[in-house]
Image (cartoon, rainbow, N blue to C red; front, top):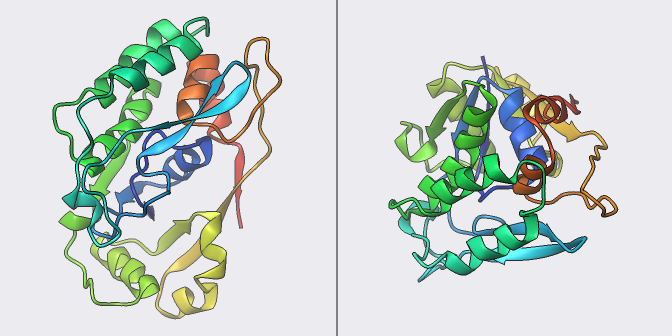
Length: 229
């Protein structure tokens, strides 16, 4: 049984969903500090052929607070309007926009809840069952180093196969993990593209864009466009 661990992001890019798709168990790393300027509360969509940033405010956000100690602002009308105007002519708008509304309008405003929901509802939409966990709910030693925390989670999850995002290559050693009984591999997203209406392709946008322009079968295919190294 393989697993992966990532901070919960809000409708992140396709590569994040590929990582979730690649494993049996996925852990939302919610008991670590909030990163200002990251993708926890913002991402990019396509507007008039160009990438446009959307951000949901997080009152009191601070790098001194844990992700699960913060909540999203309740006022998201402007953001929903921007998404609607950007994609109202997209072929799958009628199917996808209600899904996005259900996430962003959720009464539980906790950051980790809404971000995790922005991941899980997509897999539900695609008919894929996944096992999701929050790191805050796992009984592991939080005083360890970054690598040892992941190895401790492997023990809790009874897994010896850990898959990490590409950014971890400079942080984690295959030999170190292997010596402690965990096989470490990294996921690499292959080059992908799809039709975005009349516009030239713009990559690395929020999963919202993928959902708006592709049917379920096409999205399932895009989720497999990676390799493990």
